[in-house]
Length: 219
Image (cartoon, rainbow, N blue to C red; front, side, top):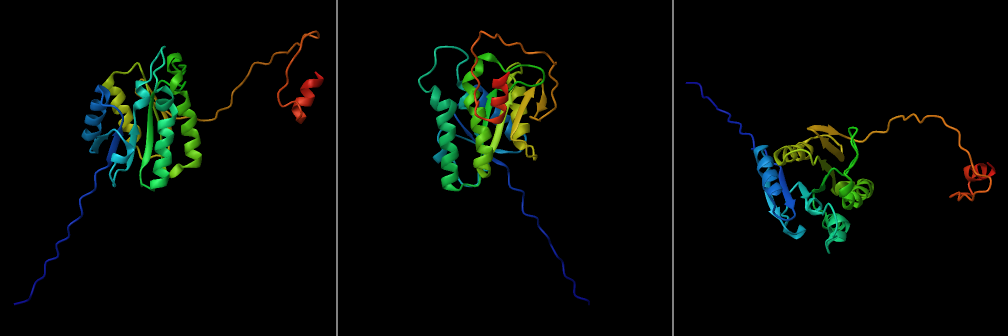
């Protein structure tokens, strides 16, 4: 009788996308965790960056969402709005962890024809930090995810999950009424108008020692 051989091939199970949520436990944290788990991600919530284990691919910084919309300013305003996420980026660079930091904000960007929400000015430093991080430490930078304050909590969580799990390279995204926006340079047309100077007035020309400043000064 002829001998027979059987080849059995087994594929290694695909590893889950591991995400750490960094910040205080809130209703939104719970909703976001449930949404990400529904999308197939593995979640853990930590209060400190040192608690993030190896194998985590993305870290979500949510403490900026707790910044106030009006006075008085909290004592830890500077830490939440800048110093803490900056420290996280520095620690990730030093530890050489193979993961990225994402910062979640609400209505910090002006987009879709709607302005930024005036009361979220405390989030503005995070936008500047994100742009610098994208240039200086891209290996540990994930991006800014800007949510819409007009959306309900579940919609905001789904939008955050979509940005985080999307495979593209956008590192600044804003969601307005379920639509995703990313910044682009576009041509803008300014209506032509004449400028009149008061001959008795005093004007300050910054950068006046450059070629353009000298020309303006002669006007």
